[in-house]
Image 1: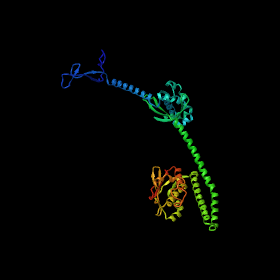
Image 2: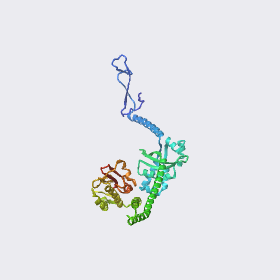
Image 3: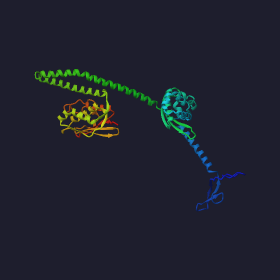
Image 4: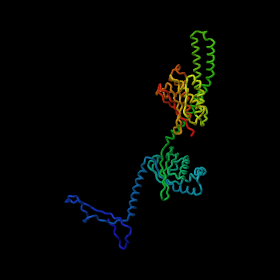
Length: 456
């Protein structure tokens, strides 16, 4: 095509964009495959079209039109509820408030809830996609738009306030949870995610996605109720264990005392079977006292108030070793330690924890004299304390069950005890937000690890 000059018109001085156009056909007689040029002269015919700005405008317009069509296609058929909102008026009003000196937006909107309603009413919904119609069970876009006030509960006003605060703060992306309803009145709980787009012509638009989290919220409510019930049940159980242990102490003490008195007074005066029976009664009473005492200690761990403060582990360890001095001397044991940290813990419960772990190491010794070493290493905000011994060790299959209450891996005649010490240790650690575990193998000793919060 060619753009011709009209009579009297002034030829523009801006350079033309010249486009070379040629038509080619193959010469059947040519062996080299050379194309002849049409319309009959060699070379290409040059034709002036229009200037560069004209072409650029046409190309931009075409690209924009294609982009808009593609965007609209994606918007309509994305399997997520979407709609477009216009915040221009709302943002302009916020700027007028800012010019009046308003800077603390949370406080301002708390004091003026009517402003939240006013600014929220200035937001215009421009378009809604098909999935949003499905979410709210609307027959058409018009059906949903004219009923938009019905789908949002008054409970959603706090989320509107959060949205306005985010707009005032210049956030480009934010999300809130909002209470809503379908057009038929079924309650919904939605996660509302908004991407703000500010154009060069001062328009402020938002692309809003709405995700139905109703089932998740129902499960959260159920989970909270179950946790509260479990917490109440645990408290009742701990209270019962404490009362039972405490109340059983006195009658058991009486049985034990009178049985021992009977043994002292009539030892040798009765036959051999009677002496054996008396011995069984005394031994059983002592073991029952030990069990009840440990059960009472376990219940106290869960019910006693904690005083969390910075605690020097080295100081607590020295106190524990003083308490275990008799056991250390009796068994020829030795306890060493590296530099130990200051941690955030209840001092008395940390002492009980270390005492249970070290006394276990001294009790379950091998043929050699017991050697125990206490060390610590830093991991992030936590400290990992380790109590290593050279004892008999524990098989892999028992690494979990040793922390269960009354769990014993050996006969009472071999290693006395109630099987409560490690359960107490586990409860203390978990009560302070840590974990406890062990590494061990039969005949190679054991290392018990537990994590505690550092003072930072």
